Length: 316
Image (tube, rainbow, N blue to C red):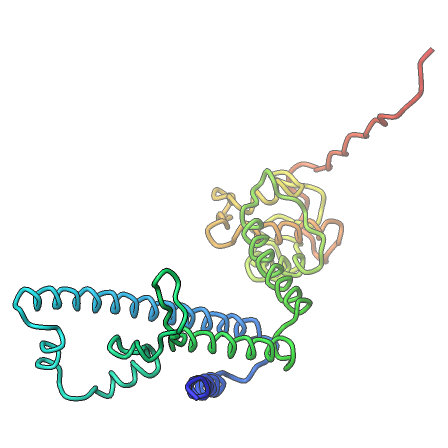
């Protein structure tokens, strides 16, 4: 009967907790499912930590109570008063509601003066064994683990709401992609005139075209044809050198003596790389009303030819 009482009490408390958690949980969707899973696991860990803390505190209290009783017993012996008389004089009549609850659902130990009722018949070297039941706190904790196991199995296996290993793998891969994108974005902003390379993908070039249209057209024209301030960007002549490294450097540092500001104060290195790559795509587009060529003819240096390492030709 006592076990059934513990089981029904803990089932009621566990069901109430689950219902309250379910009522406070927002409606699931694909975007928030990983966050909800993390919140559930965090709640479980916090609950387990709280239970362990409570158990530890109860043990500390019990040890203090034991030491206190020993001190009181020693003082009573010195005064010639029995501990039972001292307890009867000091304690109020009957147990309080909290004491009854504690003894029933946490301790439930047989008093020392009634241990004769639970002594077993056999003895070993004069030592007899008590037929005490398991402590209720231990039984209650064991029942909680069973409830947790049932909820876990239902959520992750029977009910189908919890992610399986394949779903967890997909969620981790999505998270890894997001972290990689953040890392790549940070690496893109560390580019300089020595490490910059020309971009050819449509996405970055589209971003570069937008930056050019917003910031560069007043001086270089809408199609890069140039005007009274800025040079023509569509021919093969360059005032400060062509190629991605020189164009990046010119945009970054500017040409203050000719009215071009240093855009490094307003654009990130990644943005400068995008607009520089877009400017190089304007080469040879022949827009209407182009400005006369300025500067020196720029020719990109050809990459040195690689010598085969497995050549078997032998000069004679």
